[in-house]
Image (cartoon, rainbow, N blue to C red; front, top):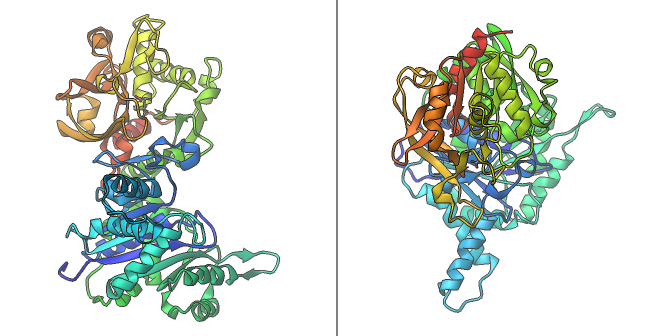
Length: 537
Ligand code: GLN
């Protein structure tokens, strides 16, 4: 099928941010893969940071990590969860990275005495990055989502670059513009003017959208569709209604119903004769929407006001709940608000507790109290990255009696550094992209909860940390009942700890949440939710 040249689809956004370009891109990608095409999705981010790794989650939400160790935008998580296909550094490009490359080339003298300018040097570098994925020969489609909103100063070089691409290869490029049709309650009317204006802004930049996807809270109806088509020079069936739905996992089916995939194929001159295979997706959705049981678990973190900060974790919980035919409600608990007097009332009615990843010392004492409580009360516990490190600290303090036990991240002077800086981190001076990042092998111990979840001895998981379990304490912890059940044998690093005498107490140094997808819910999340169901309060 993939003999015809790779097709490039660009997704822009108008009127306002947060309309869900990532979900629309992922949904279109899903519909195309369901027809047998090979698809990858890329995000262009208009900020000047080289990657989002140095940004606070309050600024940017979760930082998503790929197998090859790139710190990327959380939309890449949606792409992987929908397409069940790994992304890489090439799937996320920022203005910072573009400029960094161009400036490095300038310093090397690659521009041969020329003045280096936005057009053509920056735009050429943007075009090169877009085509990098297409040129691998692996894909029939590259969907490129352009971050921000049309009209933003920051996004101008990107729009200019894709305008040039369209000019250079008319037959293989397509523009989808995602826009908002607001409803004015007082007038009782849906309004198309903001969409007309945002399309005008695109036209000023030389781009005519081929398809308009219209986010709306109410059905837009054929009259309004016709009006939009007329004012914006798009065909009537290329005006796609995108109503609000209860779960993002419904969007591919909604887009299929609206004919988004058909319009895209037609406009790119492709046959519309393949069978659309969505059975697995529909089964998932059916199970998600008809749970047999319900539980509530607690998620202890420090960014609970901003749920995007834990996006992959909450999606992994949805996948694992569905696999267990269970609706899982998540109670967000602020770590800084937990103390030994209120922990039992805060956790009343919760069937399990997940302690989130994190950096720095804010909220860690609350997390340690949470872990002590669930350990002592046989409540299923899942600790991720910092959550695992704090489980080791809690055990060392309260079972081994090392009251000063800590991580050198929080207390450099601790007499008992059960968690300390990794050797390879000791020479590191720069912050960006320098953690232990990406996928590493891990060997599991038979009969552990981890092994029973994965049903495999050799696994690979993604990491994002600087500190690690201190092997000097491994035997002492083991004798007292906390064992290492997952090891990276190459560097002798402890990746998983468990307490076998507890019903389900698992701490992992890696981030399993980055690998959970609709088709492959993550084994550890499934194991954790299963234990929570068993413990239902
Ligand atoms: N701050 C810890 C470290 O760097 C944990 C990081 C995390 O939770 N991702 O090792």
